[in-house]
Image (cartoon, rainbow, N blue to C red; front, side):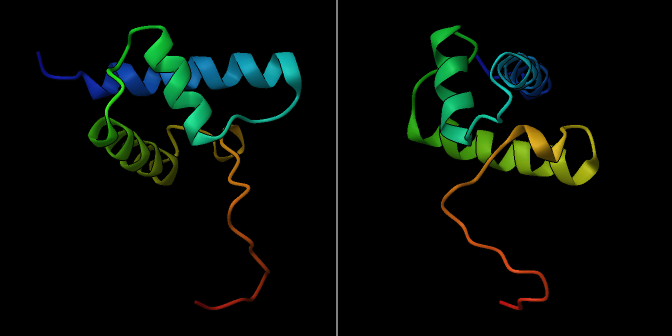
Length: 83
């Protein structure tokens, strides 16, 4: 059965908001992924993880998923830095 990514992103938003309200910090992508797997929203596969990452990135750029709800502790960023 194909994955309904619109539904998955809405569920991810609920999971992320709930966690943020309860703990005062954002989840990582991995945290969102495993919570959705636990809730049986998506299967636990590397390809689904990569697709979730891509879909959440797109949603953030479109303004449909708030940036503050996902934290990325693996990347450093400095204002004015160019890659």
